[in-house]
Length: 140
Image (cartoon, rainbow, N blue to C red; front, side, top):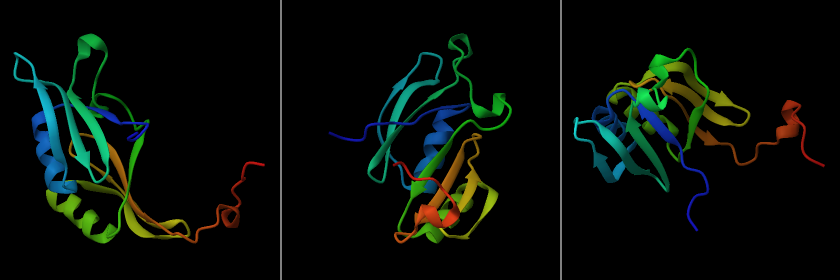
C-alpha cells in the first residue's frame, strides 16, 4: 500500500504550478488531464516518496485557490534530508519566505509561500525531539 493521504491543491495556473514544483522540489509529473479550455482538470506529481495532485480552479464547483481566500487552512510539510538546499531551491524558483528557516527543538524548519498561495513547511525533523520537553501532551 502507498501513502494513505494525498494533498490535492487547487491553483490559479496549474501548468505554471507544475513547472514551479518541478523546479522548486524536483517534482515528477505522473500524468495530467487537460481540459478543452486549456486548463488542467487533474494532475498527479511525485515529490520524494509522496504524490500530490492539483488542478486549475473550478469556481462552478466551489474549487478555488488560496489566492481567492483569506489566510491558510493547511500547510504542506516536507521533511527532507538537506533542508537548506531544498529551501534555497524553492526560493530560487520563486517562493517567498513567510517564516524564516531556523533551528527549533523539533528540527530545522521554516515556511514558504509558493507563487500560487500554498504554504509549505520545509523541515528536517530532529530525531531526538521529545514532545514532552515543550509541554506537549502525549496520549495515555
